[in-house]
Length: 325
Image (cartoon, rainbow, N blue to C red; front, side, top):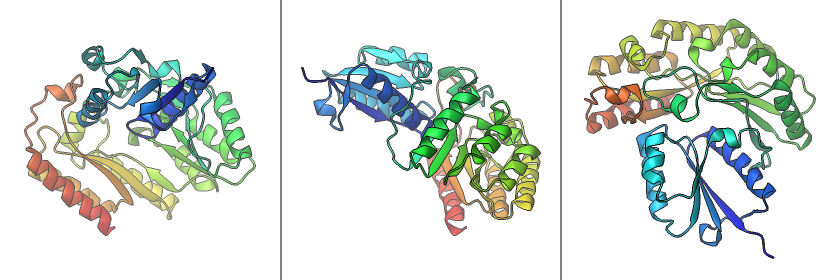
């Protein structure tokens, strides 16, 4: 009897890629075989991302094209969206259902290793605490064992990932332990929260040969009032001091960031503060998003008073600054 086939559609970031690799393992344990063709699949998994409204809109669009298929929805999905999609899906898998599954890696050279899931920060624009729940960390032994297997199988890039990796208990020690494992590989991690980047972590990055010196530190805005409205719990001054410290200790470090333009209430003057920050820090990379209200978050209750045309203008200005760097 021929095996049933599955097809996974992944939306979102590295965390969702890692989740899809674990979903694949869960399905193959149940006897399914992967197909790259959704038409040939007996079961389709849509691994959703709800961070932005535009992302969940793409999920709705995909569901409308898959009529007649058995569909499981997985990933970051708000309860309200689950109800809206209920007549189009057969089941929903919470991320916790496959978080600890042993993965089937998509790449043969790069691997994403989740060390935690969920978030305790409750940034006003973000749905992650509502879709993934509070932070849950994997046991360090599990992470080390998974990493050892990757090194043994000649993986050249190992990424430790989570919504806020540097809130993992003894994260610095975890990095140091993996760095000291024998083998040729580069160790990356993301995403970090500026309020949790400390001197010990900077020292470990500096002294460890295998840890990448590309450091991703989302700032989100260059204006203190906007940062407070976002509930980011740091100031621009704190962020600049932190970057200065990193570059003093690790001169070769390359800093990347995340930015949201057009957050509710962001004036042109406040945006200019973000431009000023960009010119001062000269980010290596920046992932720039145009704000869109996400139902279920606190910011969705704020007045979205920056026109889309103005959001696009601000996006273009920052994008050009990054390209120039």
